[in-house]
Image 1 (spheres, one colour):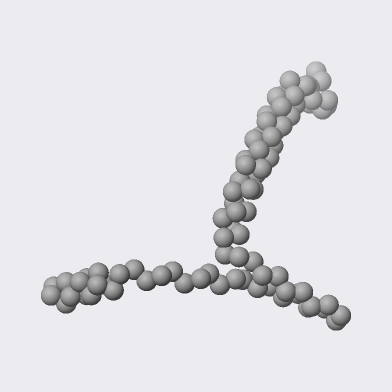
Image 2 (tube, one colour):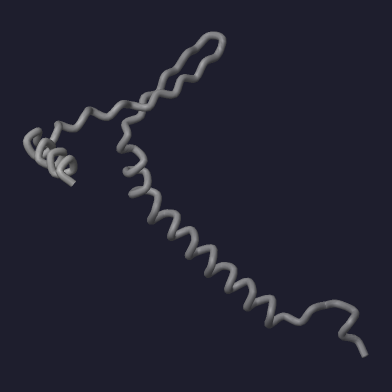
Length: 86
């Protein structure tokens, strides 16, 4: 218990450390004549999520509505199969 208190007090005396700069993610594309290196910032994932989430939701809703219309249309149309003959 005393060791835990001492660790807590030592952490309070140190204060908060400054955050380290984020490292960039690098992707390298190699071919025979060209070498391309693309560096991405770590916050790119968050930005892409903010941009793509509304578009994905819109596409999902449009697809759902289209399937509902198609299923309602096919349910109202009689089939042309030979099983309905008497």
